Image (cartoon, rainbow, N blue to C red; front, top):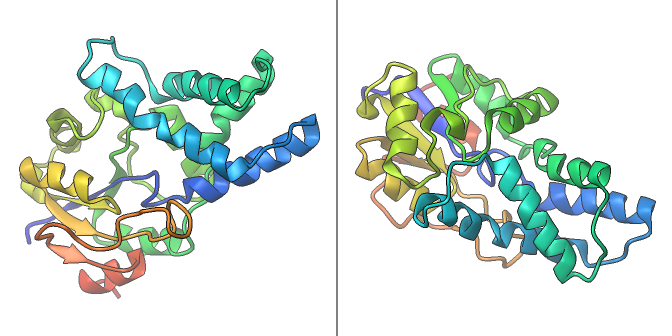
Length: 235
C-alpha cells in the first residue's frame, strides 16, 4: 500500500470518552451537590452529538465548532435531568470536559510507534483547540492537528476526508483512515482512502452497542494500535 499518512478518528477510537465524561461528572456533582446516574448523563450528552452536527451537515445551519454544539447539548441534557441552568463558569468547565478525555491504554504507545513511519493526524469532528488541548494533556503525539475547521465539514461528509488529505499534501489513496466505527470507514473508503478498523468494544460501556466486527472489506483489522503497528511492519 502506498500509504504515507494515518488519519485517526478520535472520540472512541483514540480516547475513552464515556469513562472520562462519567468520571468528570461524578467529581463535579460531588463538589457541587448534584446527584445523578452520571454514566446515563454521559450517554445522553453524547446521544445529542450526531443530531446537532446534522443541523450543520444537512439542515442549513451555518458553520459552528464542536465546542459550541457540546455546550448547547449540555444545556439540553442538563435540563432533561432536572437541574437548574448552570452558571457560565461551571458550564464552560463542563464543556471543556471533552478537552480532557483519557486515551485508551494502547493509544499513546501505539501512536508513538506508528509515528516513526507515517504522518499521524486526527481527522475528527472536534475543533482544533479541543483536539490540541486533549493531545497536550494526554500525550498524544500528533504530527499535525486536523480539526474540523480545516475541512469546515463534519464527518461523514466527503470534504472532511478530502480536505484533510489535501491539507497535508497527500492524495486520498496515500492516506489510511483508522477508526473504531464502520460508518466512518465506509465514508472514507468512498473517497479513496485506505482503511483500518480498530474496534473499541467498551466505547459505549458493557453491552452498549459499539462496533465489534468489521462490516466492510477494510485493508487492515487490528485489536489495538500496537497490533496495527505490527501489521504495518513497525518494530
